[in-house]
Length: 58
Image (cartoon, rainbow, N blue to C red; front, side, top):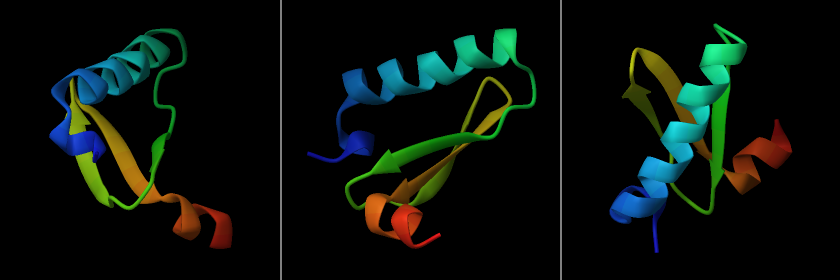
C-alpha cells in the first residue's frame, strides 16, 4: 500500500514532521517511501517524499 493512499499512515507521518518543526524550525523534511515521489505541504511545512532507491543513490 502506498503512503498517500492510507490516510492513517499519511497523517501519522506528517504529524511527526509538524512536531519536529516545533522544536527545530526550518528543518528539511524527507519521507523515504517504497516508490512514491512528490512534495507535500502540511501546516506550511514542505515534506519531500522520495523512493528509497533514489535516496540511496543520492
